[in-house]
Amino acid sequence: MYGSENTLELPEQAEQRFADGTLATSIVKELNSAYGVRYSYDLDEDNSLVVSLNPGPVVGVARLTDGTVVRFAPKVPVANVFAMWDIAQGNSMKLDWSRYADVDSVDGMYDTLARQFILRIRERSVRGLHRTYEERHGRPAALRGRINVAESIRRPWQPELACRYDEHEADNLLNRLLLWALYSVIRSAALLRNDTRTMAAAVFRTLAGRVSLVEYRPSDYRDIDYTRLTQPYEPLHAMARFFVEHTAPELPGEARRRAVPFRLLMPELFEGFVAEWLRLNAPPDTSVRTQQSVKLEHSVMHNRPVYSLSADIVLRSAGPDPRPFAVLDTKYKAGGKLDESDINQVHTYATQLGVTDAWLVYPEPLAEPLDITMQSAVHIRSVTFDIGEDLETAGRRFLVGIGVGE
Image (tube, rainbow, N blue to C red):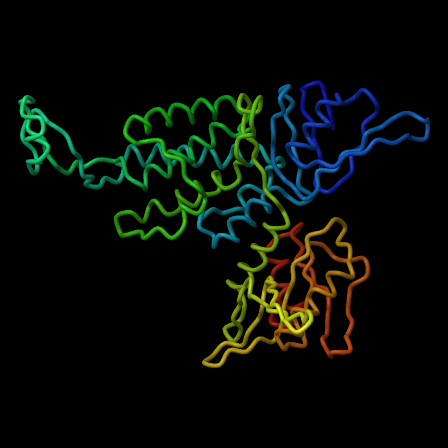
């Protein structure tokens, strides 16, 4: 939908058709080059030129050079999309996602979470930011710490002695991670409400007066060793990682002057979500391994080079001698379409792992469910983890579908 408010909505994995002249050519080209939106021109029944746009499996918000706001709308409830990310990360945000069931847009949900994040940082600042002793070098007016003899001798004309001393301050990693995430929020195209942006800017200025602005990658928010004193930072860093992870890098040239897009790639999200949900909910006698390497040998002349593939999810028996008994491969495709190459791929995984049960996992039911047994005795079936409904209910049905639930 393209309206007078200078907004464009493109439903995920759906083709949208626009009459000639409705969209400027520059918009179509920018959507394709910057955001991977597929396009084609053809004629309608009246022989008029139309352009078709398909964003693919992307959810998010972007702002184009001319100011147009583009919403890549999900096929499923918005709250489910955000909850899937949280589950894929081990529920580290510690949020009750049922509270957000009535939020119906990506930017609405983004704004809701951003406000919570901003308020939590402000509360943390009021209660007191975590402080650490940081080593400093300088020439304070009064003698502090230890004298740096070598530096003092090099500059004898300076009356203040060079010292090494510890400063008890808030400018440390825990707080820098928050400041960088807050900076990402302010720059995001998904933050459309002016009052939220104003509040974010105010909290940013307050924090930036005490903490250095340093750029961090999403991986920097993982594997932090929290103590009893720093434990309150864990859910804050989980929310911070969400904003940093899905704020795309700045584009060159003119794009530097507009808000940075917020994007979620649904195939990767679906794969991570299914794997983590299964790990958290599998029965005690079943262990879950993700991205297990599967080696393939290929004979070329007399050499046998080795190729490696990664199976999405491998189920193994728990115990002192764990053995694989099933392999699962997630497939996030429009309309849940079955592809022969998907069958061949999961069959390869199963034969190399020595298991006879293989599953193709889809986010919606197939029109014709798959249930075949190959000559190798590998039994390949399709199963659904329906992310369009309540995730807990869909997950329990999924467990039953793969034979490990009740």
